[in-house]
Amino acid sequence: MVSKKLLPFIGLIFCISSATIAQNTSFHTAKASAPEAGSMFIFPERILLKDGSFYNAERATMFVPMNRSVENSDVISLDVYRFKASEKANPNTPPIFFLHGGPAFQGLESAFKELGTFEKYWQFMTDVADVVVVSQRGIGTSKPTTIIDSRKSKMPLNEAYNEEAAVEELQNRLSQEKEVWENLGVDLKGFTVLEAAEDVNDVRKALGYDKITIWGGSFGSHWGMTLMRQYPEIIERAILRGMEGVDHTYDHPGHTWNAYKRIAEEAENSEELKGLIPEGGLIAAAETIVKRLSKKPVTVEVENSYTGKTEKVLMDGHWAKQFTRGYTGKQEATWPADIITMYNGDFTKAALKVIENTYALRSRPLTASYYMLDCGSGITPERLKEHLADPATEVIEYEWDYRKACPCWDSDLGDEFRTNFETEIPTVIVQGTWDRSTPYENALELIPYFKNLKFVHLKRGPHGAIRAAYLYSAEFKKALLKFAECGDNSDLKDHMELPQVKWVVPE
Image (cartoon, rainbow, N blue to C red; front, top):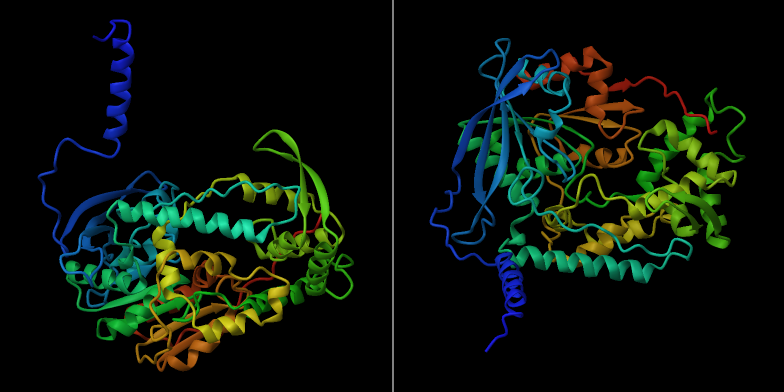
């Protein structure tokens, strides 16, 4: 017989056990059938404008197969926006399908919370055609959003960087996260750029378009080029920037470092930094920083804002290679000041960045889809060998995350996928000489394969070259829209320049 005194405790244990079971088990079975692949639910979406009025858009949930190579595959959903063409547009112009980069596109809903975003970046396109924005499978507003735990174990900051421990921690965490999604019934094998290209084609068919114009950059150019190879007959024109070709997922270290060399050349001749440039120049200074800290690390005491305690941070060769590309934001204007500051022996701000990298949560959490997409596209052995032999790997960190993380995901589209291909599709490529993410040389390598190409060299152009160009030049914007409307590229110049940078002076 159970004592009455124990009954409350038994009840509590039963409740806790039940709650634990309920996290993973349901006592009810869903009776609703899954949506059919290829079906789309379209609904109105009102976008608040800066003046308080609204733009009436369309939004849709598109259901597509999770893995088209599997018969009777489960479905996943994509988030789709359509901005209808204005009265100024020629109704015969194919729609613009905008393909975002990353792959880390979080969707437009959050972006539109900042008033003026639609007017500044989207509305002008509607004077040419319908504009369609397709989300990336498994990311952002697509469902399921394959978010993973990207919290790093907090390695001791006052000890030398331990590569073996860092790799073990990363691979254990990612292997566990992969297993989580597989146990949840998600077939990660379907999360590749080939499937993402099929997604775009399915959206095209669902919306009733015969042909489309693609507009994409960075991963969006990689995604777009995959579509150009798979379905050339549906693409009327292409507008690309930040070129990431079929074998460009891993950025070439030497070509990336070339962007910094071009930035350095201009910074060294500027009035703002006159008398502050180290002897031999900024590139030599960056190399010296790595050599110094590799040989003799420096300990810096700084306030850890995450713990409220004073922290000792050991700045060694590992961190030097992390910060030779700068630590103050992403603007070109700050990079010389970062290099000059570290060269002069001041590592305070760099140490604070180490703490931020260690403690801060990512503003955009990583996803399993990000890894499956990029690792699947991968790199050929020949190109990887060339990259690893490049002298720039002695100065900047080279794709550590891909090289150490991709073995966990078992995603590889093969070297045939990574073979360049020729296309006759009318294309405009705008590439910035200061692109530090997808270097200028990527575009130079790809130019011979585009047989109907207008290439625009953008001096001082960043990764977002097209946006930078049209925000600066109304003439360029008009010429680009003319191409989007009718394929006439005659008003686009071969060479453009952005204004000179106002360099940040080190404190």
